[in-house]
Image (cartoon, rainbow, N blue to C red):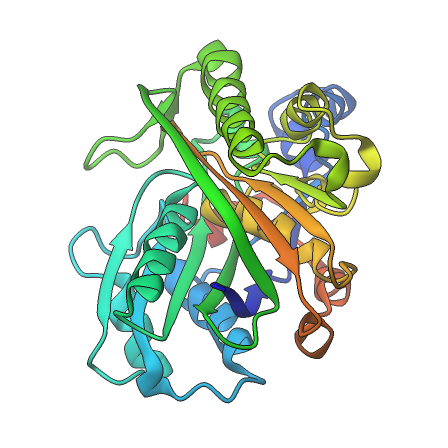
Length: 340
């Protein structure tokens, strides 16, 4: 078996209310909130970036394991907001964590599914015997241009997974991917803020890829939606994951725990994984979790996870971490995001 041995997450303590952003631009807060199904989002501080957040979530992942640093043979970091265009985040992270230098490292970029693609690669390397353990991190300090629709949803956060073959908390039962050239979201070199294709981001992009990856995984595993205790989907807003879940036969009970976007926003590469770790706070041994990421450009990675008895020993207090928050106003938000 190959799967998740340990996991960690980092949620910045700062929050901004979506209504406060709407008021700045003369919008009706209720209209924005009802449209996006998001009330507030997590914001990283002025001294935080995707690297520092990846370090924090990785520290949590390592905190109660007996894994020696020289057993980590792979370090992958998936992000849309790497601190450097040229200079890997993965090697700096490994240095901070004091991981021995005999490891394979690289950064991945595939919009919001950058880390789940890396997880599939890492699982393959473990299965091949290349390494016993791999560290895969998802971290983003995402932002949108002021007065753009993305400004209401783009958030900050990080999730780290240690993959291996022993003492798993989550077994990877199976996975599949579905990809196409559908550029619904992009940012060219030297351009500060991303652009998006408006109406093309929904049905031809998010829904098409998530649904196709999901259906392929159902077919591959011979499983049905009602056999899963939890369902997790990438969360660009609060409406899309609910709609796609319903189209695939999932109900609200299977979704309720994973919908963290309503109070944390869309942390891009960490978004779906943040939903996954939220379910691990309540998941029970033997339960199946259906998980699908989505990245613009476009593609989805779909996984079936099975909870093991070891989760009880490594369960993280997600709700408690979410509760540690401090609200900021819009000028402070712009300062933290280095917009001004």
